Structures are given as structure tokens and as C-alpha cells.
Image 1 (cartoon, helix red, strand yellow):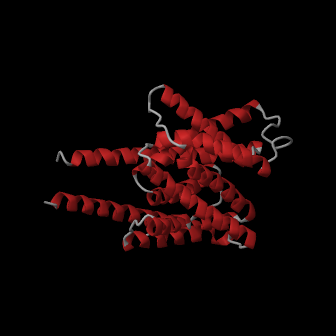
Image 2: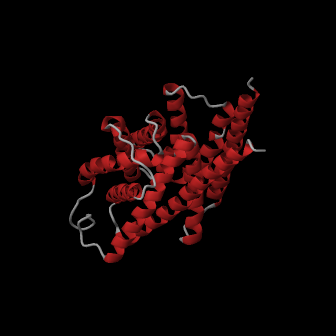
Image 3: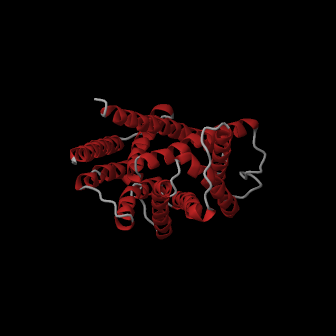
Length: 313
């Protein structure tokens, strides 16, 4: 019984981290939608503000002795910072050059690409049962988006680059925490300002800094308050993402991402009266069944692994 207590405590911590990420992610989706619909605030600039606020939040945390910064060489995290910028740029370009359905379908390919990267380059193995759970999840995404899937060459290129860079970013978030022996706060404390600096250089090429819709435009006080609130929630989202990947895996985080997508669709239907057709409802059900299957098989494999360790002489 005593041996089970640490396991229960560990599972409780992971469940708490997932819950924080779920609530923060849902909040930020709807707040960002409100900001875009009512104020038209530029998207990439908003992401830049999110990471600046994240770094400021971590700076306050380390001043309050919530964590101790660990000295890291910039060369060790520059690829992680660049991959984040690539993720922001290419996902935005994919969204601009594809329909929502095509964008979501491409985004669903992140999970299998992560499995391929971890299998080929990091020698990680995945059971057939885990791989099979991708079938109902992908089918669910197709049911949710097939009515709006349209392909064009430029959109497909940006979508493919977005999936590849996003997959690398999520894999490296986990790899760097273990490789550098740092926790989520310590890694994000160094990566956030570096990514912010790179994004600051990139944003003017995609979004005008001044004029109507520019970040230096005449924004109302209410708009700035909402942007700041979005940044504070983004701090919780970014920190919980790093924590979840560091304590579970990029694949588990992606599975959880599919769950958040289903909740967001249902939330849009309830809160904003967004249309939800029968096949979309079936798609959500199919995706949730796939996620439940993944959770069941993953927990069973963990228990089997622990049993083997206990049985060793």
C-alpha cells in the first residue's frame, strides 16, 4: 500500500497539470477569439506579447524564490527557440492559405510525425495498440473538417512545414529538459526571451507595426486590458505545456490537445452558438473514444513496466 502512494501522488500531479492546461487553453482560445472579433489585434504580435509576459511572469517567480534559474548556454536552446518561431510563422501561414478544415486536418498529423521522429532519431518504441489509437482520432478530425477541406500547393507546403516544425518543437521541449537536467520553469525562463527576440525581428515582415490594425495603432484601454489578460493566461498555458511534456511525453500532450479541440468545439457551440452538425458530433465522439483508448493502453503499459521492475531480483 505504501508503495502505491508515490504513484498516486505522481498521477495526481499530472492530472492537476492537465487540468490547469485544459482550463487555461480553453480560456485563451475564447479570449483570443474575442480580441480578434472585436478589436482585430494582429495575431503574431499577440503571440509575441504572450511570450514577453511569460518571461516577465517567470522573472517574478524566480525573484519570489519559486524556482532557481540554471545557467544555460544559448547555443543549447537556440534551436528550441527558433523552432518555436517557425511553429508560429508556419501555422499562421498555413491558416492564411488553407481553409479551416484543411488546417485542422494537417494539424492532426502532428501526432504521427512526433512518433516517427522519436522512433527514428531518439530510438523510442511505441506499441501497436498506441499506434492504432491514431485511427479513430484521425477519423474524428476528418469527420469534423472534411466539408471544408480544399487543397492548394502553397497551402500544402506551409501546412507540411508547420506540422514538421511543431513536431520538432514539442519533441525538443521534452528532450531539452532531460538533456540539460532542468525543469519546465528553468527551460522556459531562458527560451521565452530568446524566442521573443526572434519573433520581434520576424513580426514586421508579416504584420505592419503602425497604421490601422498595427500594434502601434490607437488601441482602446479595453483592448489593451484584454490583450494583457490574454498574456497572463498564456503564461499558464506555456508553463503547463512545458510541464506536461517534461513529465509525460509529446505524444501524450498531443492526445490531450485533441481532447482540448473537442472541448473547444463544444464550448463554441454552447457559448457562441457556433454551428455543430451531426457529422461533427460524430467526429468529436470518435476522437474522444480514441483518446480514451490511448489513455487506457498507456496506463496499462505503465503498470506493466512497474510490475516488471518490482519482479526483478
